[in-house]
Length: 135
Image 1 (cartoon, one colour):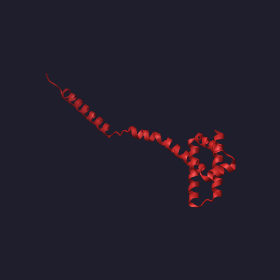
Image 2 (cartoon, helix red, strand yellow; image 1 turned 135 degrees about the horizontal axis):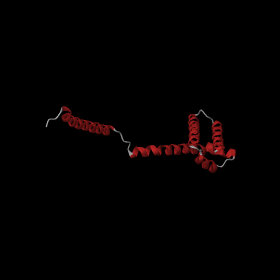
Image 3 (cartoon, one colour; image 1 turned 30 degrees about the vertical axis):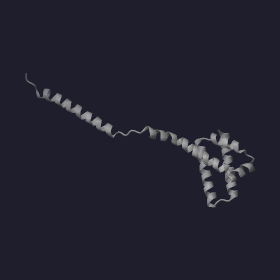
Image 4 (cartoon, one colour; image 1 turned 180 degrees about the vertical axis):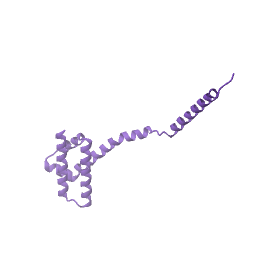
């Protein structure tokens, strides 16, 4: 029985191809990066932490002495405002928190007077009320 070149080399070539492809797949699996469950949990918790931080910032300004004075002078109950803060959208809470941070920073630096801070707080309360009314 005489074998031709194709008959001898075809099985050898097939074996080499299988070995080469399996090596290729093995190296692809080694370089694949997998995100850990801990990282996924941290990423999932980040929006909640940001939301809580924003709410705390707004509440901190409104519960300050100047905030209480502004609420009292406008006849707004802090409990209602506090409840309203929790009902803000994430975007509205973020915007109001940013304004509150700027106002607190400027007041602490002495660039805002008590009266200016009072007006800013009243504006924040008005925006909060309007944002909830629109929803």
